[in-house]
Length: 116
Length: 117
Image (cartoon, rainbow over all chains, first blue to last red; front, side, top):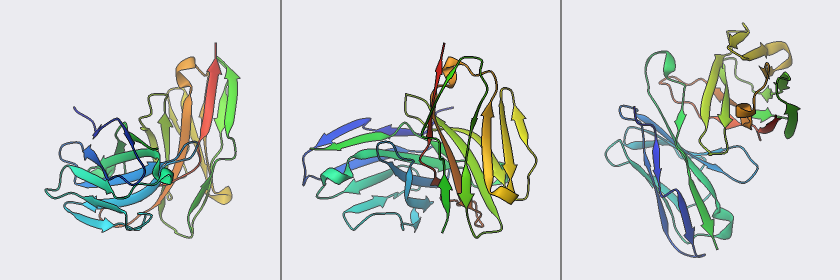
């Protein structure tokens, strides 16, 4: 079946601009995660959604970052007043809650954000 | 605090060699999960294995095997008879077990494996 999809695959923006990154999880997966991966590093947790609500947003670096998941499926990560330090690959993952596979997160291909 | 250390930044081997990727973790939790993910050049993280803290049995899946030792807080990954297609960055990750299935993954920095023909 279809995996996690993310759009756009690449985004180049100027410092100070607003960007939106989209994630479409695997159908039926109620848990959705956002991670950020800087060059040469492992992914770092940003936020977790259980259904429509953000159950844990402790990884968001500051209030310029915000994410929504209004209907419990597609999620959008929003970054205001982008800074060059925001440049990274933003990864989305989803998982099915229930049974033995509950802890397995399936990742999308990521969105590479470059802030110039 | 939870932490994952992958001390090997890069490993280079020739095809058919065996290679072991090291992973050491820190956690105060008694119940936790350990994972390995593969990130090929395409960039998408591919799930390889999940282990819970109560199951110390080693696991083998084809050319892949995992050695989990709680006494040394290690979860090492061995590829037997490596192939060029194994070239990728491999990440070890840790999560605490929280009811409801939610688990925030804490990743190591990754080990870049290059397998040469």
